[in-house]
Length: 168
Image 1 (cartoon, rainbow, N blue to C red):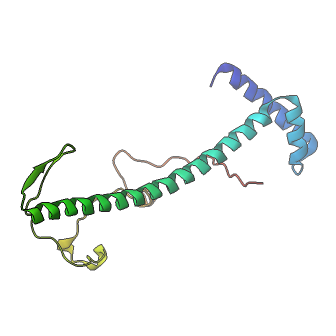
Image 2: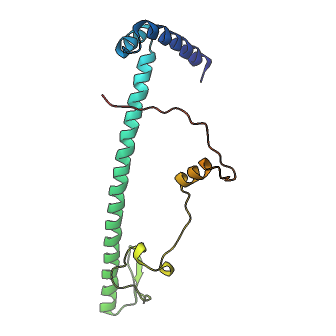
Image 3: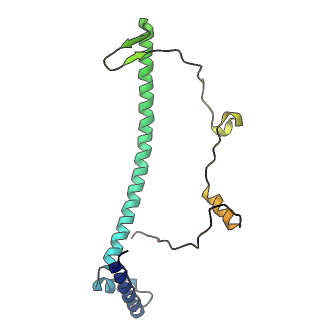
């Protein structure tokens, strides 16, 4: 933060405190109107809140698009596999092992055995049929640290402040 911003922040804080003392604890609108009339701090605050709301909306939209794109990807991968199977079936039907086309050289081959049937969920399969992997679980880490356990390289902070935005 530049020195000018720090100075403006201190000046705004001093103005804020003096106006709050005059208008009281219950009149936020009078406080905001008065401070806003003296400078651009409230405009900056409103701008930051609008940007936070906009970023949250964009994050939700990106999440929805990612889900849509994953679904589209699976659909296209399945379609591509069906086209490949059709091409392999055609080659077998006409008795050719491979064929050179302008787009690609295609050939069919024998594949190994494949699983037939609907594979149940991982919870319904025996342990030797599932893969286990370690992932960090931050709530467990926090609980261990709060219980006084030592985890190399980690500790708990003293906390901080958070901002709640309730839209009007």
